Amino acid sequence: MLKDTASWLVLAAGLLLAAPQTTPAADSPVYIDSEYGTLKEVIVGLPYGRSPDADAPWLQETLKILPPDEAEYTLATAGMSWDKMIHPVKKKSETELLEAENLALINVLEKLGVQVYRPTHLTEEFITRNYGPEVLANGFSQDFPRDNMIVIGNQAIEFNLRTMLRRADISGFQKILSEKFQQGNMRWFAMPHAPPLAIPSPDEPALEGGDLVILGKTILIGNTLNHAVGSNRTGCDWIQQVLGEEYTVVPVPLVEQILHLDCVLSIPREGLAIVCEEAFTEGIPACIRDWDLIKVPLADASRLAVNGLPVDEKNYIMSYNDHVSNDHIRSELEQRGITVHPVYFGTHNGQGGSIRCATQPLKRDPRFQ
Image (cartoon, rainbow, N blue to C red; front, side, top):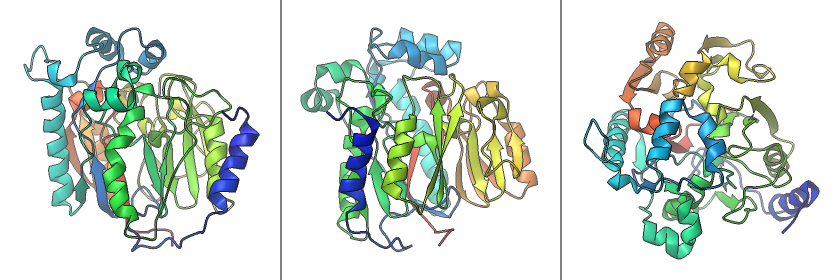
């Protein structure tokens, strides 16, 4: 295995930048250049998974990003398949509750004209057979497709995740991506991957999709101080080398209790951002600092208040749950002429993600060509 940062960057430059470049265009099978261009096609997650065993070595650090009640529930349900996790009050399984929320989200997306894809269902038998029982002990989750990859321009890039729970999920995307790739005018490649049971060292590039916010040729990438999850600085260096000088990658350091950048930053349209200022250890990024900012406290951001999805510049999907109504954000957006589509997402929120996490945009109308 390559050990140092320079070797990773040479690999990226030699294997990827030397490859023939295709011309990004609106008619590519995948295309993203902003957070708010009209959404055309999107993957919505599935309600299948298994909670990590209580002794999974990465779990204790990961629990720091969850509110105390959610961390307690995670430990109480350790090692359980989601279809066997029965909610003590609602008397339904985690799978049933997650899918009800997914269907409510899909209903909004389809009414707004968005084509929805679903990943291939992965079973515990599939994980054990193809990844091994040790990987299954770390759990898997198909409810949050955001982290395993990203589309930038007409490039689909699979990521190397630090979060153990979501590493196997990419297998559920292969059929969708393969069919897109066969249409042509698309680049599809993956980062160098750490061994399945190893957390990448600081010298090994790691990226998770929830950390990346696309603003034309500027890519903001969150770097949480929690070293068990999220993206690292070497991952920022890697993708800068891969994308080349045409793009500017901006690392954004975050406090330890925040998992990803999209938990504390959302861009409903150009010049407008929803932010949790307390979460940025070096301040709000300069490129958006002078924008119209809707500010949210850290307590609400920890309950996923900021993690919404712009469908276009006039429509925004946001979650609410039993702890946070998000009425403040909704009111602020509506005062600015944006229609808000609230979706109850309490089960997803309890697992540490929300609307943006539960979606992987494949195609938006271009805004920066």
